[in-house]
Image 1 (cartoon, rainbow, N blue to C red):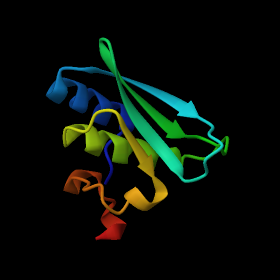
Image 2 (cartoon, rainbow, N blue to C red):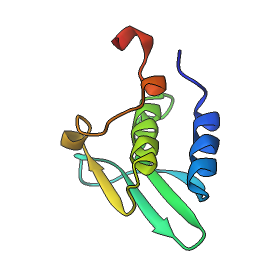
Image 3 (tube, helix red, strand yellow):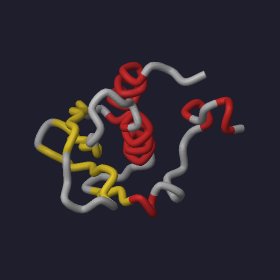
Length: 97
């Protein structure tokens, strides 16, 4: 079972010692899923959020958090990159196993 997203953000903040700010974005490039930007005092995780009322962006945020755990900073996640982000076992849905 997936842990709540807020607790995953807090866990990554504690592990990295950096504050994480989440922001939904709309981008003209449909292949951009999200990006990580290192800012003074925090990491900005921006995720594609184009469909109001749906929670598809949760998967993107989880991928970005996994990349931060792996040490990625100033990174753009494209649709074709999603297969390369190694998600920890606790992030993978039981139905996917």
